[in-house]
Image (tube, rainbow, N blue to C red; front, side):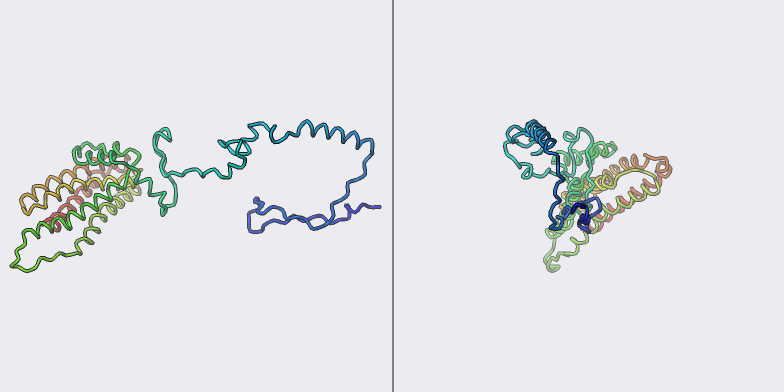
Length: 318
């Protein structure tokens, strides 16, 4: 007679249809409640010899939990886990994810993250500076503006921390400080002193717009028309620190003296323009196409910066 196992229909393996084909999902579902096929009859003599050999094999290869090799335990528990604490791999803390690896950690150049641009992890790398880094960059922008070595100072770590706070400081000094000087010289016979609050909003658009929108436009021109492989963050950092010289100028302009204000403004604009000229010129000359229009391009850069300085003097420090 034909055995029952030969007439039973084949079992159908079921899996999760919402996962990929190479993903087992929840695993194969248990088979229907059909009795397992009975094993075929064996020769008693062969079964005895087979049982003896299998028992010897099991006794030779099966180890008690305490006799398992230490390497095998470590592989089961996870690397770096203590074999005396089974299951500790499930409780190990997740690895820390950093946006930027320092030179000591990466053994060389810093590695930039490729996270989503709207995540904090992406922007964290542009604020990874300390007080010493910012002080060295300010010193290069004010004391040695014609050296053209700002790219060597920032290296592969341009920051946005300095440009952000430079613009915020300029807004506070020029919107509030200069009007405070006007308040000290105000004549009460002319009426009450009034402060135009819209100067603050205008300052936000003026300083942040120039420090971030102008270098973005320059970066687009250099990449698309000049063939210059430069970074947008480097240009933003360069323009932000170029405005640092206007901070001490704004403090000097608190004095209600027009001669002193012009004396403080003209050298500040010259230092800031020279800092931009000598650093942007080296960036433009990196490619043959950029070298071809270096002169007119630099004329536009310095001219736009001079117009920004004159607007700062005539509107804020007047």
